[in-house]
Image 1 (cartoon, rainbow, N blue to C red):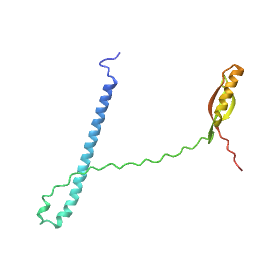
Image 2: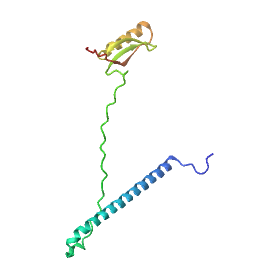
Image 3: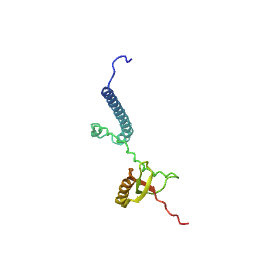
Image 4: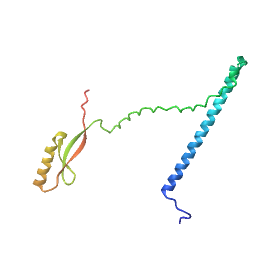
Length: 149
């Protein structure tokens, strides 16, 4: 027996979206902190070099530090998918043919793809002559390539 309140999927979804939003905000805060730390360390490194020879200029003290720039994450390029090798038992090329089948799904005749009308005519003739159902169906067959040795 369920104790307490049963939550439906809409409530669960809302909770999950809120969780994702919190995670995204936390990541942004961490990135901002890291960028600020990096900017501060860069400014500290640059400050002694600039101030060593130019101590007498009054304009250096009043310059505001540039606003921190957000670094964009580098876009990872997807590697092109490799062609999967064919299995040894799988034929390399296929062709489509029309086959006439009887009621017990046994092929009776086979016709090239362009000869569909002939196949349907043959199925109709067999249906009327033998008084049993015959039908035409497209079937893929392997093309047998002749290897010259």
